[in-house]
Image (cartoon, rainbow over all chains, first blue to last red; front, side):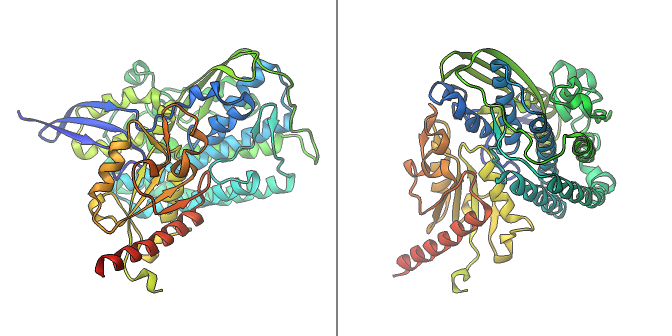
Length: 361
Length: 142
């Protein structure tokens, strides 16, 4: 049979970001896919040699504009571990709330892009309209829509008043109600099912052997969630990881749909449990330069992220490294693309929720 | 408005941006800002585009892509550099793989500042881009 090679990307309507996949086809069927990366590589990790550790947090935040809050948080957590800083309680809870809000933001963004990929533009618009509400909350509480810069080593920069938190919760619950309607479209619409059911099935064994993380692994029946470890106050939150068993594209959509509702629940619990009052300490700023090394794991919207920081007692860090969730999910994506039909490639690629700027830094 | 005598179609390319500006570019198309009301369409095809929106800065790998996309766009065309990175390299100017702003490889007509650039300022940049486009069109006609 005649083989055709179709280059997918770097500039492709379905991807806001550049990645190249050389799709090797036999008729309509993809037999192999060769990824090429490097289009967004900036050399961010090496910038630690030129940027002081106190300022590096703002650079780390710009690894990715979608999970920016969590990147900043992970960097600060690592340095707090190295420098033995006790973060004030209220700051920890605020971080948890912002982290969950950014998860809702990211999932709504992705659900929209996913809908756009399977040609349901109306749904794309609905998801992004809801996402604007979340961005509004972010802008009111942090000052930024996508880049927030509220994390500092030792705490957070801004407080959110109790009244404001209560208002945010009301707003999120309203949003949750509106979201139910949109979620039911994803779950019940026959044209969506036609595009997604049984497409790109990742078995639990393959999810394990390709070391998938986050919603990708959870959609294949693996109950992995870094938050279950209980760090960063998650031990005080009552939640169960969202798991689906089908492993196809629709299952990956369903995991994210349910996680939006789960995150609203987590924020409700957090607002309930956090210490109340005005003027509580937010920051415990460390003195001097860090020395030592630390690993930090966080559950980002796309899955587990790992940070490694090594400091040598000067104001410049020796090494900073981030293993981002999309990087972990690429082997599984390549496996899924092999054997699928050409028309399903955009859906499969999008359902891993690729974040190329995270991957390449 | 006479400025909108034609519908400007936009081609968006992500140079080496952190996504922040890209999602703000997309946000311009969605219900809160909705530039499609004015006939501004985000197209994936360079041959259909009038305005080239570039986010992020130039690195070794994407120089050819940016030049290629720019070269494929029909004249007259306008380039809008969105965000601090596209203007000058921004926070990543010191990173080893970043060569600087988009103007190192293609002529830029409008610079939109901000990290990340807000949708309002991106829309403003596009509106200024439309004015520049009209200017170029008139020059060609005369």
